[in-house]
Image (cartoon, rainbow, N blue to C red; front, side, top):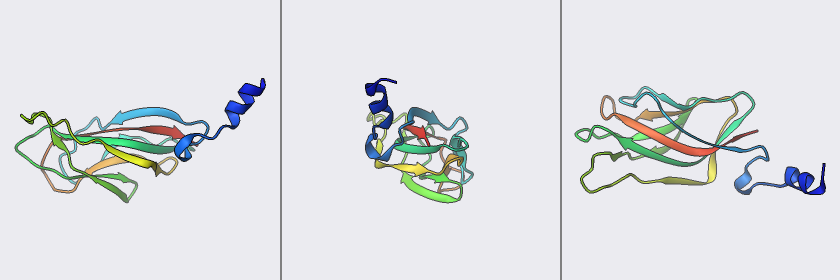
Length: 131
């Protein structure tokens, strides 16, 4: 191993990310329509999720929803989804997390509606996965 390879392997990444962190993005494949959680990113054994950004959209503009991120039974930040068909071109607020939200190893990242039976919502997240 060359000294540059060794230095790279021992380098600390910013924001407390582990050396083996790999970028990912994910969205819930099943729309969030009620207070039943939907998986955004499944957990991986031995790896934590580091969420750096989230954005939420409501596909049903005649209904309003408030969302939460959740892992296991622990509630995370509240997200206010933007209406996709908003005539004003509102494409939603990007929620940035610095430092990242850390989801424990093997635990799913979910989205859940705070209000029952309204909206058809999708949450997009960006982040890293690593030990």
